[in-house]
Image (cartoon, rainbow, N blue to C red; front, side):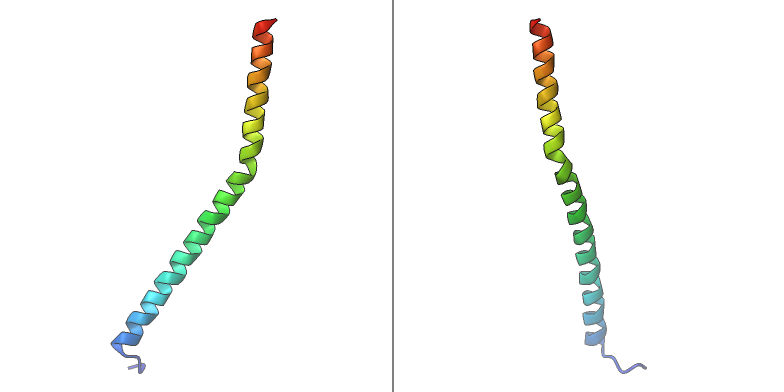
Length: 59
């Protein structure tokens, strides 16, 4: 036996699970940050596109 008690093994498993969850949340946060950088550009392009469409319709 390696000298670890059942409690130690459970604690190690829980710490591994928490580490995996933390890495998953970090990856999701990075994805959201990457998407949020482009959001203002998309909104601005949409506003300009709508304005151009309105101007074309009025002329």
